[in-house]
Figure 1: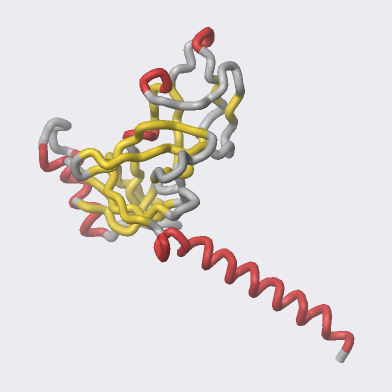
Figure 2: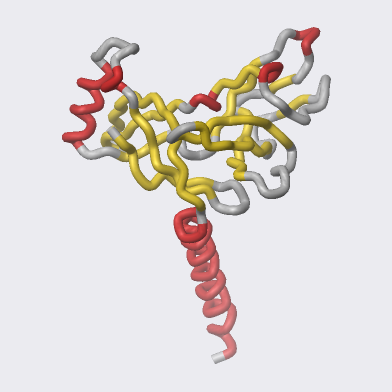
Length: 182
């Protein structure tokens, strides 16, 4: 019986890891606040992943000098560094209003990370930062993929080409897409 004790400990440890991954994935859906974001979507097909939409948000590329922030001059920000994008409701959509190291008290913030190494320094003219929040792709079925192709073929100023997503944002800033709205 004692010989199998390490094996049982290993099995239980692996089950705890899987349970933690499950809870982490569904945490924003269970406890998050639902918001609506503007999005631009492009259909993509992968042999392994199937049809999915590549999503680009207004915050995917931000001009830093027009947005309140607490980024330090001359500091390097790397892929994986955690920043918080403060969001406020404007009309039917939530829009970015600030970029900070910590989420301001009482604000709704989206946890984001730079996609490339970024230096906040006007001398180098790096005034744009590209961000991702982990909600940049969404699986779509075949009929919606065809519909997305037809929407993308419309002129850019067409009202019918307006897409949005419903996202749940957890108190810690992590987000999950719940629905792509055509």
